[in-house]
Amino acid sequence: MEKITPFRQLARLCKDRGIENVIISPGSRNALLTIAFTAQEGLRCYSVSDERSAAYMALGMALQTGKTSVIICTSGTAVLNYAPAVAEAYFQEVPLLVLTADRPPEWIHQYDGQTIFQEKVFGRHVKKDYEWPVDLHLNGLDLAESSANEAINLTLAEPKGPVHINIPISEPFYPKDEQKEEFTPWLISPLETQNDVFPTEDFNEFVHKYNRKLLVIGQQHNEFVRQNAIRFAKKFGFTLISDTISNCEGGIRNQDIFLKNRHEEGKKSLKPDFLLTMGMSLISKSLKLLLREYQIEEHWHVQDNPAFIDPFRSITRKVKMTAQEFILKAPDERFKAEETEFARSWVYLERKAVHHSKEFFLSEAYSEFHVLHRFIEEMPANSVIHVGNSMSVRYLNALASHIKKDTEVYSNRGTSGIDGSLSTAVGQALKTGKTVFCVLGDVSFQYDKNALWNRYLPDNLKIIILNNSGGIIFNMIQGPNEQMAFNDFFKTYQPHKADLMAKEYGLDYYSIQEQSEVNGSLEDFLNSTKKSILEVFTDYETNSMTYKKFLNTYGQGKR
Image (tube, rainbow, N blue to C red; front, side):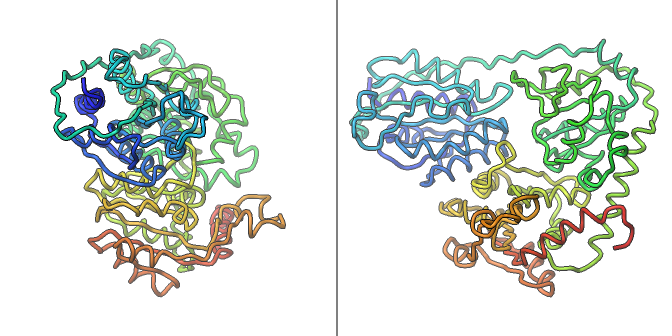
């Protein structure tokens, strides 16, 4: 058997299992993997030199398609550069198959080149890791076949996530041209799923027993849940609450505006007795604090994840199934869900928050918050937004009532890092015909500007950089701005712009530096048919004061 044959079998198995996208970072140790995967019909392979960016791009592709993406790299520190995106994929439950080439074990820590300890290098941030034997063409084929099947299945089994196969490879790396041995494809092991039975009896009891019922949905991208969560809530008398990254239609979405300044008794009156939660993380800190503060009698969490995840410290029952399955399997009986005083209180506050938000933006003050609001109002329907972390995602969450209902909102909130937002958005743009807007701060852009260092940038990629010359989030939270080290070590002042970067990588570039430029530059940016950047320059202090004023003037009538 030729040395490359097991790698050709692996590539064929990936194709047969429905995998479409493979991102390869160049190297010698992974040459056999590169040759095998690029030769396999049905796989779309991309060459991306920066491993950190490559892994985030693969994450974006998997987010957009729902299918496992493969990443392949050489040995050594290249592997470590995968770690941020692998961790994000783990906590956001995104399917990645991580294939890392390695030195044979006898050369590890022997002053040989490009060697680190790669076995189990991602620790608990992968669902499982596998170590293959050296020289698969001589031994270990059965192990390779079974573990490859299991690894691909694990990426897709709920909860989805990353799986790592470390592959020690000895020299030589490059097969001769005439070596084109026919091979037998590996057999496919079916994906098995098993979920809890719907707890009908207890659900019926509690739905009838409790009047103060909340359905809280965290980050999720399931289209069925998007459309049906509000119907489910109304049917059973729940008040639906979500964030922008929950991608749900209807319900309460402006809780950050009215909970922040709510007095103690007012908050207590909003406490549920029956809390039903679905999805992953929440942006809304005020909501998290409310649900942590008071004792909740019944809290059911619905998620097909064996881990016990309890951010509110109140779960009384874990229902191991997907949100879609839970909604579909709920009883057919239509409950007489009368509107309660509890529900009316939430709805009243939501309407008041929506009114406050509309009133606030009637002024033409110049800040990044105002420009972002204007963009949200003008952006085309049926678009995708990938929003960066820190202030960008908080701005967008505060603008929930202005976002068109058919907009898909994504953010790397598994780990909430700022290091791969743009690369993830690039991966998404490559896998959808929709316009993908990446909204991020200047520090996030500079951190991940290698996302532009590839030859695949699509014309449906639109980047909005909120450039206030530093990390504004540290001026929004109590503590950092009171320290002597604030300017250099928290705010991290940076004077760079993106205009030359846009020119170097062939993107159209637009900028806004004052109020009079907002309409024209935004219109030109939105009408551009090419990949492009809109850079919004604003004053750091003005931005801080504007956002604080937005939150603090709720309920005070005219400003």
